[in-house]
Length: 199
Image 1 (cartoon, rainbow, N blue to C red):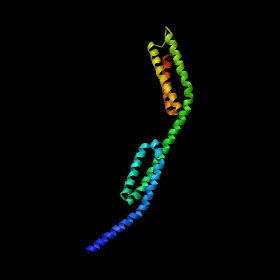
Image 2 (cartoon, one colour):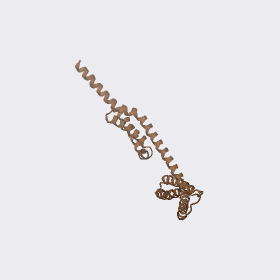
Image 3 (cartoon, rainbow, N blue to C red):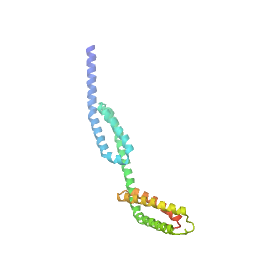
Image 4 (cartoon, rainbow, N blue to C red):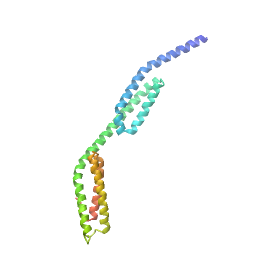
């Protein structure tokens, strides 16, 4: 009886090993495909969908752990979900990249007119501030305080404009336009406070 149970256990263990070996090939193939797909999208996802990348990375690590433990059935079972997650990650990264590239192209187009228009506004304000600073009588609606505010605002605008042109020079038109818009908003307010008309 004892011999029979030992033989039975040995047979069952051998059958289990054969079952495991049968699952190993598909598991190895599934894991290899998943790793290749993940590596192909990794850099793009790191740049455009980093949060989603972390979640998929964890999912892949879980499948790798199952494989390392010899749980090939779990690897094969998890493979379709992992493949779908990697595909979704690629779609998200591609969509975000397209969105940012479109925004950059628009910013680049917007920068052209701004780079011509804003220096003229700043020069006009500077000229007006110089004239009013030398004048003994300020025009109606312009106070000493508004003139002083315009002077300090002018320095701020020049500084921000310098940052905008520097950003544009390095190809970061999104930042350049954002800073240029800030300059334009400030310039418009100062021109109004000094009785100038902004076109």
